[in-house]
Image 1 (tube, rainbow, N blue to C red):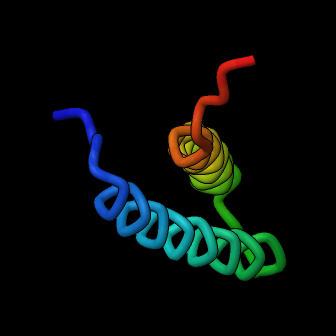
Image 2: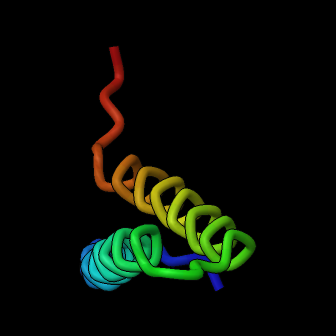
Amino acid sequence: MPVQDHAEIVHLLAELRLEHRDLDATINQRTFAFGNDELQLTRLKKRKLLLKDHIARLESKLIPDLDA
């Protein structure tokens, strides 16, 4: 289901930014933890990048199209 409504996009962006921030904190914790799991860290980093891309796509939807 594509998100079209401006309010829905803003709400979803807030949720995705929170998840991105939480992943960042988790990655930082696990990076310096004794016996860290490199595979898990790689998966977390990949998820973080996917979230960043999704956030960027949604932010671009909020920018109005201007006809030149």
